[in-house]
Image (cartoon, rainbow, N blue to C red; front, side):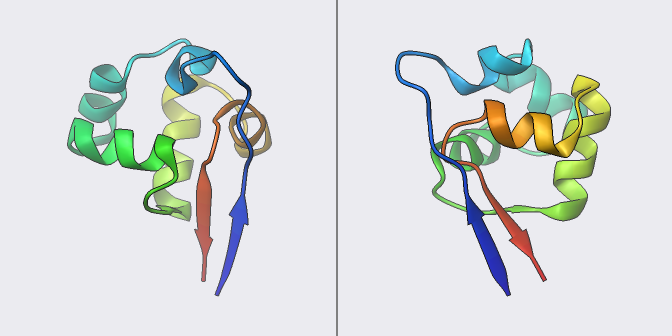
Length: 77
């Protein structure tokens, strides 16, 4: 098990970096908005398959997302 911790840029909302709001992300991914919020705050890790869905929704690569989203922790099994 490995967790990568991504640090945050001050003063920016994480989903704003992606150009999509939390509600839109939640609907597109089929998860609750609170789940998106917990991922963005680093309270829970995002699974690799969910990160893949996030890539599909945003048109960004996983590396680009990891650079843009503060406190995102990716669970790698």
